[in-house]
Amino acid sequence: MNSKVKGIGATLLSAIYFGFVPLLMKTVYAGGGNSFTAAFLRFAFSIPVLFVVLKIKGVDLRITREELKHFFIITAFGYAGTTLLVFTAYNYIPTGMTTTIHFLYPTFTVAGLMIFYREKIKASKIFCVILCLIGIIMFYNGGEGHASLIGILLALCSSMTYAFYTIFLGKSEVLRDIEPMKRLFYMHIIGAMIMLAIGLISGNLNFHMTPLSWGVMALTANLTAFVGALLYQIGVKYIGAESTAMLSTFEPITSVIVGILVYGEPMTVRIFIGCAAIIASTLIIARTESKE
Image 1 (cartoon, rainbow, N blue to C red):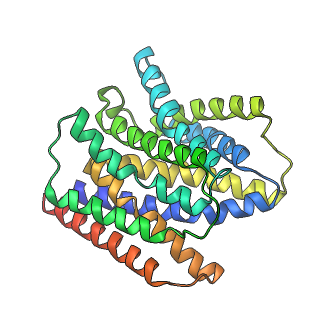
Image 2 (image 1 turned 90 degrees about the vertical axis):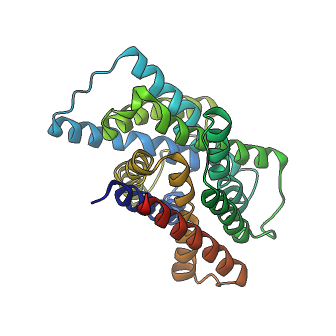
């Protein structure tokens, strides 16, 4: 299979999976969990499984000090940092508003590549960024509740940290050639340590959950590692940071479809326009990457 097609397929599958995560998290929260506990367990539960898989594959788990430094940077200021910012934003502003602001990260990704790496972005991709922005804005329901400035800033910072994660993942020569699962293994160890420390200091960790919540959380953690995060990294490897970031906006479409099919939410004109804009952007990027 062409490497570009691999990257496109991996990114879209990653986005579709992440679109189901809110549905899974509702089960965890209903059974006694909270956002801080879910963030910690998301990293912790996948570590043993990643370790076993890496050992079976015979991957050398030794890393250098330089690699460890890069793992800490990409996790603290990107991968885990984004999770913390998004979950904290939920405490101040509605989830719909948080999602809308967070999905500005494709714009920040493209801007970061242009400003810091002097990359020339094709006009077609700039047009796709605009389509993505239109699509995400259409998903926002302005009547969800009061907008807190703190919450808006947290969500905005989450879009910047995820853009940083995407760019750093694609540009770090130290991390580029490391086995993707090995990257995730160390990122999840560091992420779990960060979330545990913050959860203990803030007193927000709660492990009094139902067996169903524990089971769903364990399943979600490993699917996030082996489907969501791993496929996203494969996407960055094959089609680059900017295309991966834009294709990942397929995630909210999945969430919308789940809401319509599972919760009976209405299909409004705004939602239809938003889906159409993102699908159009996806098709343009897929065609461009495939031709290249």
